[in-house]
Image 1 (cartoon, rainbow, N blue to C red):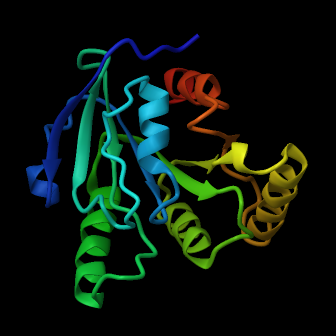
Image 2 (tube, rainbow, N blue to C red):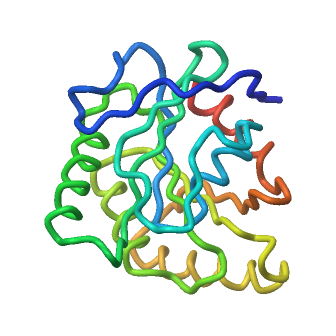
Length: 198
């Protein structure tokens, strides 16, 4: 069984050129603003304040690297998308930075797209998932905040999301249902990372 024994903040970068050397695998997390990305990262690593949590969307504006298991791999927290209260210029700048990172980072093992399990398929989530697929970037989908709804409602929303994806995807990416507060899905995600990505 996979396990995270240590996790430390490594560095923040505002440009791909500032990112650390590509000497170990990177596992990246991305999602809409307020999808619960920081909370899930903290849950997976077992560190309550590793990634800074904010009630204000768009808090993550940099590429944040976290050292996992004393140099075994990097967990990368990418800026969110779907910002409402940010200028188009800022949004364009972040998008360029993120797309460049995703396209050229040769040690990128997988990108986990975080999707809020409480909502029906969102255009921005689908666009990100399709873009990653079209660019042959390995990805998985993490449905977040599963504790906020009944299991039946979560599964209904996940099924709907899968149905929409199947319109373009012959084989769906790996899918996990998670909750930062209850720890649901944590072990499955860590095991997947250890087995498939490292």
